Length: 174
Image (tube, rainbow, N blue to C red):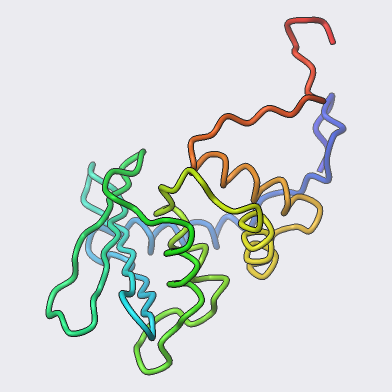
């Protein structure tokens, strides 16, 4: 795909419109809300619910605790995340310990990506970008952009400013 005046990247046309429409119908159906279970073998698990109320879409994040009969809502995303969220180490522990005995997502990369929006820890280890890059690659992200995508996601979620010194300002003429 070519865009006149934009020669910076390997652009491709979007997916088949019918596939996109079918996915939208499932994700945004007010009669049936998609739920992803992320059970953990050795502690609390998570449940991600795409809440499809007409005019009030959002994502609810719940923690499930072994031995408890009810889930605990820890966060909601309606534009921005509100709630307590999780630290990087809690995310990694949950993503890395699937429970084969429970119904839910078992792939550790998919688990990390599903619960990543819960990250509220502003102090993530340097290894976080590498781990996130590996998860993105496993999910099919393009190799040539996976590192920068991981950095952008972590920067956004931890609410840090990101500045690349090689970027030129369009206002300075460079």
